[in-house]
Image (cartoon, rainbow, N blue to C red; front, side):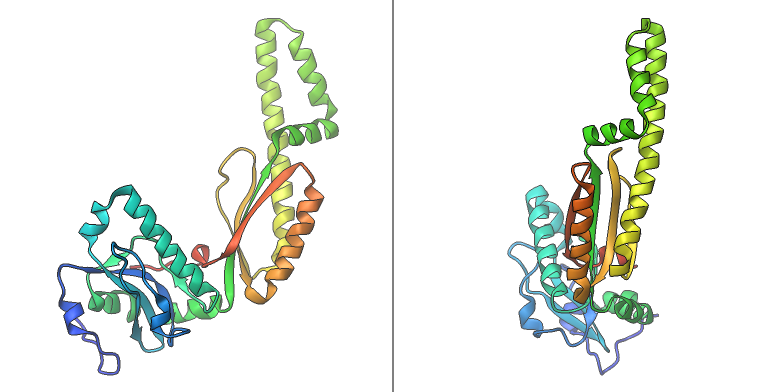
Length: 272
């Protein structure tokens, strides 16, 4: 049996009963929305639909009307445009307030579904998540080795690997092949040992400037660290200073790719 919304938080009946459109979910914030609803602008769709706040107590879900059929019919170009609109809205909001961002493409049938599937049953978890993330943003960091510089550094520490490479080149074809395989294993093990040490050092050095960290999968064999840091806005400058010092210490051995501030996607799990 469906629960009906209380009178304190009415749901627009016309929107709730609509069958030809759904609700595109951008994220959840605390009520009131900074700057008011008019400051939210437009979101996905063609033409872009106005974004509004669906209030439920002290929470507000940011949504816009959208036809699921329209989204699927627009192809790659439309998807790229809508993904850009989704990101632009969240990036603008993260500068003003704490937000629980939704992954791109979440569409619910109507406002009542959003209230009964998300806002009401998960209110406590949503409020706790907003408290935990209050005043914080996500910074992503990808550190990658420069291959030639890394190999040179490894050989400098373990010169026997360089000598083994030279001996292998002078042996018979079969013996040289076996030698190269064994040498490759030793170099791979040395790189993995180096990577574990460097990744741990990066995390330990940056951790004092962050509330939390999530480590992702390495995208290549040369990836040192692929991680997201939850950083308070007030400590962003400290995080940047530490990262600049790490970059200077790394020299030419590794490169850093840092993006943010971003909505805290890596620290939120909106379950529908």
